Structures are given as C-alpha cells and as structure tokens.
Image (cartoon, rainbow, N blue to C red; front, side, top):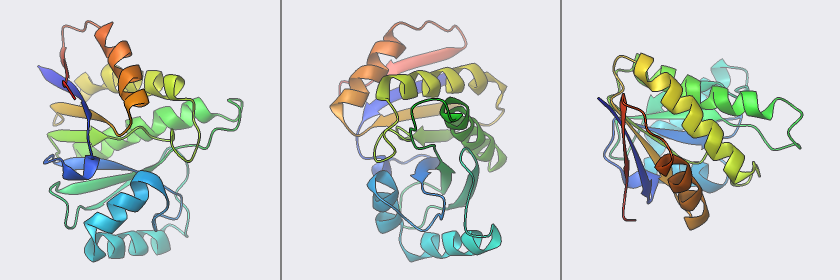
Length: 186
C-alpha cells in the first residue's frame, strides 16, 4: 500500500530518497526553500545545477523538473521543479503547478526513489493561493501515485502552520483504499 504523510518540519532534514526543490528557472538558487536547499546541500549540488543551467540554455520552463545529487543533505537526490508565479489564475498556472508535481514524481520514479518529499510549491514568493495550491498538489499526487512503480511513500512538508492546516483539512476528508494517509502531531 502506498503512503502519504503530512509533516510540519524543515524539508532539508528528512532522510528520504528524494526531496523536491521549488526552484527558480535558472536553477542557481533563489529565495525561500530554494535558498535553504542550495545553502545546505553545498557545492556539489550547486555545481550540478550550474551544469544543467548551461545545458538547458539558462531557463527551465514552468512545470518541468530535473534531478541532481542531494550533496550534504540526508536525501540521495534533489528534484528541482519550477512552479508558476500566481498571475491571477488565467495564465495556465493550475496546469503548470500540476505539471510541477507530476514531473517531479516522474523524475523520482526514474531514479527509483522509494520515498519523496514535497514542499508547498509556488506558495511562498510566487504567491500562489495556498488553498488552491494544496488542492492541486494533493489531487495530482494522490491520483497519480498508484501508477508509479518505485515510489512508495510521499511526504507533504509544510514549513508554516497555515499550509499545514490547509493540507490537514483536505487530507482528513479523503479516503482512498490504495493509499494510507498519515498526519503528524506536528
């Protein structure tokens, strides 16, 4: 049975196979969780990002994902994905956010990650409305998780209380016989 767990913690401290980084288009570090991951992962991961940056022409499109080593973090891999900036909801933001989650799952499965943790993509400096972003994240992950061979456990990691409460509310109303849902006591 696949598992989904909700935690309120620092994503960089988790001992999982892969963590998702809510990256900016350049992959060279930005604000929020991207800044923290780049700082804590260190030079090896940053060098890989520079090589990918050069290889893709300097800009990863919204919704796409790439994989690097996790450097100094306890995870094995970092999956860098670019979520959309909120521009009012009429610029394909929902589709791009859905793709960020889905393509991260694809990359995790490609590297045979059994466990994967997601931050709240695009809800920080990109200003995506938190409720809508959580609905997209949970809906995308839960609907597609059974189709991925290797991924057994997905963690939704909320840094702030507001996101945690939103995710907890959505997850507590779900009942999927193929997925076990766990929520931490924080």
